[in-house]
Image 1: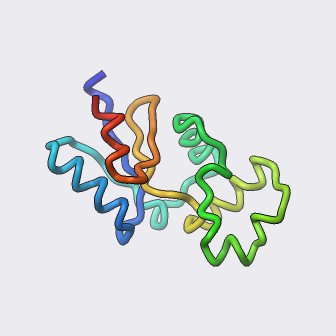
Image 2 (image 1 turned 180 degrees about the vertical axis):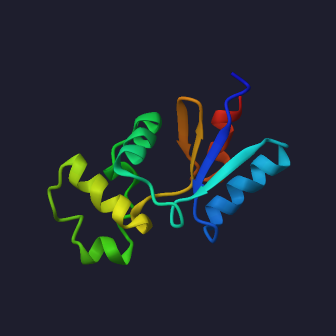
Length: 119
């Protein structure tokens, strides 16, 4: 449906987020943003985003972040729920931006990936 609102889960200083918002602005598309640093996701909200992305928590894990190394996430065999809890507690671990439209979502890396939701 064309009425599905677009929501961009992002960090304001993220270059990929800025690029994605630029594409939406160029196309004149209305959207809302959620800075998940200021408004942290709950585990259930994050689970719902993953469901719409058709990805696992590990698929969207920023494993090169300092906190990922500190927590030794690459070496640990964590359940999906354990990883989700760690990621919502440490938003730097979540790839961004995540763009949602209705029941679909994309990880807009590169920003042009948002185009898949616009057709």
